[in-house]
Length: 146
Image (cartoon, rainbow, N blue to C red; front, top):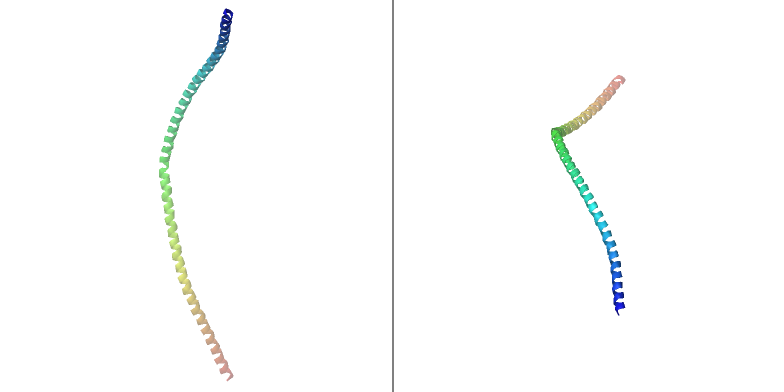
C-alpha cells in the first residue's frame, strides 16, 4: 500500500509539473500579448496627439480663411447693391419703353382710322369727279352733235 501511495504522489507530482509547464506557456503568451497591446496603445496615443495638433492647426486656418472670406464679401456688398440698383433702373426703363410703345400703338391705330376715313372720302370724291367728267363729256358730245 505504501507503493500505491508513492505511485499516487509521483503521478500527482508529474501532473503538477505538466500543468505548470502549460501554465508557464500560457502566461508567457499572455505576457507577449499584453506587451504588444501596451506598445500599440502607446503608438495610438502618439498618433492621436499628432492628429489633435493637426486638427487644431486646420481649425485655426479655417477660422482665418472664414474671416478673409467674410471681409471679401463685405468689400463686394457695394458692388452687389450697385448691381441691384442697376437692375431696378433697367426694369423702370423697360416699363417706360413699354408704356411708350403702347402709346405709339394707340396713336397709330387712331391715325389708321383717320387715314382709312380720309381714303374713303378721297375715293368718294374721285368717283364724283369721274361722274362729273363723264356727264360733262356727254353734255359736250351732245352739244357738238346737235
